[in-house]
Image (cartoon, rainbow, N blue to C red; front, side, top):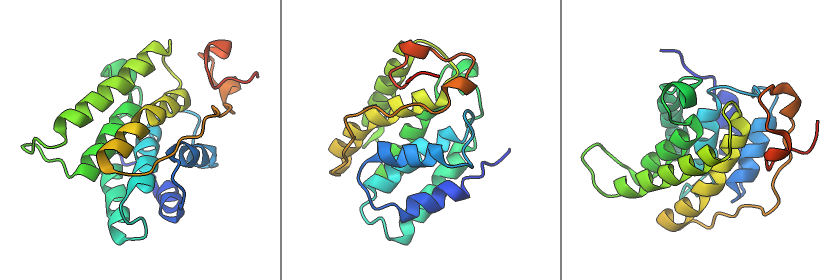
Length: 186
């Protein structure tokens, strides 16, 4: 199984001090190491949520959690949305939720909440209208997941009100253009 090179994102998350996972996600997606599309987004969304929700972000355990997320995200290949019918950004939120809550296969606590959160994310992504936009789907996922994380883990997450502008729309032949809330013209 191929692994994801997430070291650059891991370091950014470990140095992050903010409480807005959408802002951290934008920083990660703007990094020159981040491609416009692809499976690295299956790590970035959950990593931003973990970095902003972790009880002690300066502890070594956050690094361990990010490493665990990287291993899990590596199991979610590109084009999962088309091939499996599940967006990798939504799966990333579910993975981060499971890691933070300490979920295990036979542990009922947190199981339903994680499933409900992912189902809400998938519905919002499905209603966005088209495949092949990892950045749009990552933004949707993080905005839906943040209130779940704040409620379930007692964190003071904040999401900025203003929707970010997409910087890669011209690289996406399937871009929805004005139909996307993040499109600001080519």
